[in-house]
Length: 105
Image 1 (cartoon, helix red, strand yellow):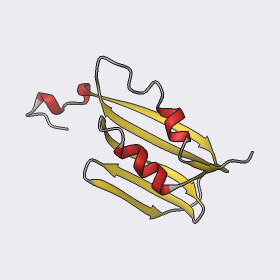
Image 2: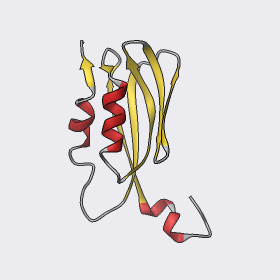
Image 3: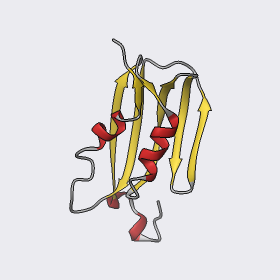
């Protein structure tokens, strides 16, 4: 964010955290598609479990990276998006859940 450009200040963005049980398994391709289909999302980050183990997720408008990481007590995805008059976050959890391929308690 920039102190010289008021359009890039923290006040123009909103952050939302989504947590999931550690046994929740995500599909990276489906999660990547989720980010791409929502152009108002400018940043996504977190730790998720996949069929190949735990990964650190980093999404920006220029692309996604996934790096192996240590096991975590839960999966967590943080979404940072541009503020708007509509509540863009209203259905995001349901849409993120579409990238889940397995869940057990």
